[in-house]
Image (tube, rainbow, N blue to C red; front, side, top):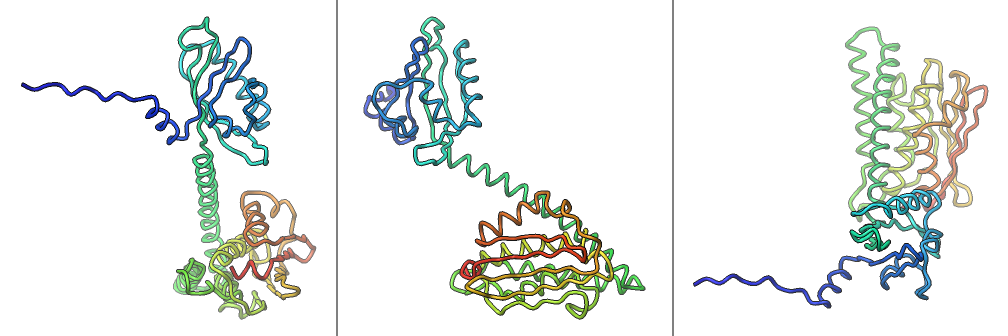
Length: 333
């Protein structure tokens, strides 16, 4: 004879251990007299004292100002409805850190007369930060694709102006696109222990070579920067900045016309590397063309954050002047 195996029963201790391992914080809100009852994990999560006197308004004060009214409205609406609910929001801890909380629960416990809500809090900060990172990456990739399309169009245009036959145009355009490919290889992160990713001068030379009407740096583009090595992280960040400046110049500045010139000069003083990007002979530079858009924000964030420096723009009558100031030790890392 075969006998049915009985289902295992969970003990209270096993349930508590399962809840603890999942990082779940428990809470109950007595709506009629506005009292919150929470377990120790919830008090730690919200960074509030466990003194037994906690109200919904006490917790609301910890919610990020941008989310506060949304959370209040959602909780008020849920009070009148039986069933489950879920809402994600930010809180600010006592040390000014921001955490993402997911509140999930059951309204009225199926009985509207009890005026009680119960549920759990989960710390979802890691997931939210990953989502924000993915959104930023998607925006950056979209921007880069648009820039590459604009770049290909601009390179085709300046190549067509400087050639007389389709064979010459095809050859020169291929050379310029190949140079861009070499630039991407140049700034690709290197394995640990292999030293700097590139020399500062090489980075400028390779990235700007496709924009010269003749052979690289025989005419319209001149580069004179200190000889120094770049770390793999700084090389990638600086390459993004150079690419953005060159793309803008190709769209609006000196590189958009045949007579336009570009000078890139640099020096090191008091552990600060200063790069001056000076355009001549192009259209009159106008501030709105360079100060708005995702690309400009990306450059500012890269220079200020990753490279630990600053960038300033001067829209002079003769052309755009950009000054980059970066700490020498940040460029070598």
